[in-house]
Length: 177
Image (cartoon, rainbow, N blue to C red):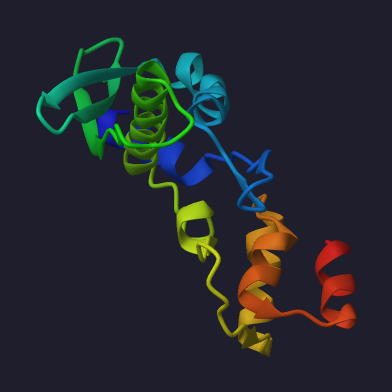
C-alpha cells in the first residue's frame, strides 16, 4: 500500500466525536488533540506517522502557517496539508502567549482537518451566529436523513437544533439512534 492509499484509508475510516463543549458559544467541537488521538489506531496498523510543524510567516501582523504531515515509515514518502491563521493581538482578556496558543491550536485543528478531510461544516464557525438571530429551516425528510447520518457519525443534536426547527417527534427520532 502506498502513502496515498494509506491516507485514503484514514480519511474514509476516521472517526472523532465532537466531545468538547464551548459554553460561551453553546456548541460542541473537536480539538486538534481529539483528532490526533483518533488517528493513533492507524499509525502502527498502516506504518505511518503524523507530525505538525508551525512557522511564523507574518511579523507586523502575526500569521502562523501550520502544516500537518503524514509520512510512510518504510519509504519516507509524505503528504502535507496546510492551514494559515492570523493571531489576534487585540483579543481582550488574553495575554500574548494565550493569543498565540489559541491561533496555534486553531491552525493545528484545521491543518489536520485538511489532511484527513474532516468536514466541520457543523462546527463552531459554521453554527455560531455571533449573537444574531437567524431563521431556522424546517426539518424535511431529506434534512432529517442527513441529521440522522450526522448524529450517527458523532455530531450533536444541539448543532441540528441550531439550524433546523426540531419538533419533539424529530428529537425523539434523532436521540434513539
